[in-house]
Each structure stands twice: as C-alpha cells, then as structure tokens.
Length: 205
Image (tube, rainbow, N blue to C red; front, top):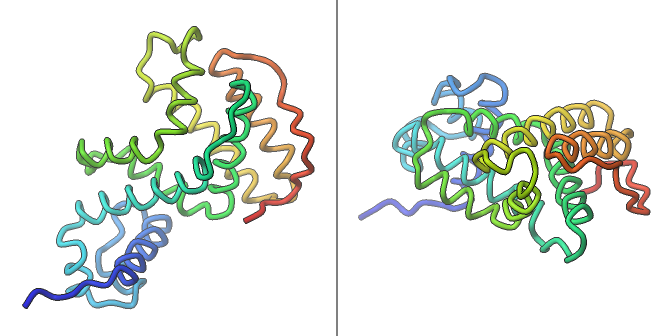
C-alpha cells in the first residue's frame, strides 16, 4: 500500500530546507535538511526522492509564498508608478520579514537544477507582478531586452533593499522609498519616490 504523505510534513521539509540552504548554500547536505525538519533521511526521500526534486519543489513553494504577499490581493488599478510602488513595497516587506526566503529564492533562481516547467510554473504564480514589469519595460531602455533581464536587474536592487531593511527595520519607509527610486530610474522611468501618504516605519505582517 502506498505511503500516505502529509502536506504538513512536506511543508515542514521545505521550511527546513530554506533554513539549511540559507545557512549552508545549495550544497547543504540532505542529512542536515532532514535533521532540521526532525525527520530521517529516508523519510525526507519519501517526499523528495532526489535533491533536484527538492530544489524544484522549494523554488515553487517560495514563489507561491511571494505571490501571496505581492499579488494577493490584486494591486488596485491606477497609474503605473503607483501600482509599481505598491508591488515594490509588498515585495520588500516579504523579503525583509524573512531574509532566508529571499536569499534561497535567489540561489535557486541562479542554479541549473530548475526544470523549464518549474520556471514556467514560477512565472505563472507571479503573473500579476510580471505584467507590471512588462508594462514598465515598454518604451524604456530595456524594451529590446528579455523581460527576465529586467526582472533580474530590479531583483538585485530589491535584494539590496531587503537586506538593509532587515538590519534596520525602523528604517523601512526611507529604505523602501530609496530603493524604489533606484529601481524606477533603472527601468528608465525616472522621477522621485512616490508620496503614498502612509507612515510605514515598521515591517508589518
């Protein structure tokens, strides 16, 4: 009889893998990940028979977690700059609240272990955010470049902003605005950081 697998335990494995990879990189031993999850290596293999499958599952887990933070609920309609600012602020809050997730997502995104289908599924999860990137890309200096390149450039600025905010959460508002101004300028849109009328000085859940 096939073994019944627990969704809760599978999630525990993915969360343990996030912590282990954030600490030790993609070379983190499977035994360390299993120990972090409170499982034997054999039990871990029931959920992810190979490390490649674990990496692909973890990438989609993190992408969906990010999507839940950034594109759910949908960003309200309005001028592109205002929608981009709202998406940016949600993105930075997600990464700054748990820096391990952001670091591991970047490591996985740069690895050769992800399948084409996994990348497509990850893109689908972030469809709302990617549509903002595509709209900002049109007519700018990245217009003749792949969308993935633009996302990578802005992602590097987002990662720097997240790291800064995670170290100084009381500076969330100023760091987030400064990072957005840099990203907006990198896209070729220019302009100052948006005046949102909010007083978001702390990372809020």
